[in-house]
Length: 106
Image (cartoon, rainbow, N blue to C red):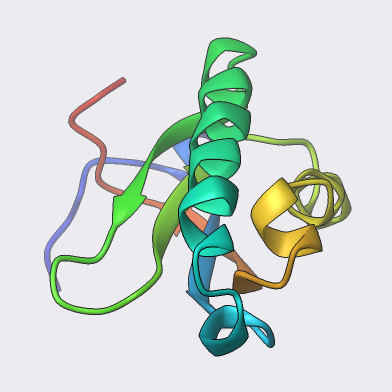
């Protein structure tokens, strides 16, 4: 086992949101671009507010991943539920708590 040099007090919890095609993904047609644009605008707002750490689309699949900093999973689920792309059925989401042990950004 590799010693990371970190103890429990230094762990960081982020929340990974996995985006996949939602229930309306195939039926949205031209509305996909509109909802995607609104999703990006919403995510930029979350980034500016300090909640979204990083995010982006997959290279070869529809959907993507975003990492959020928040006080709880419930908070992230509320953020995701208010996203226009989630409301419009473009994306389905799964929220997972992630314990960051190695972090070159902090």
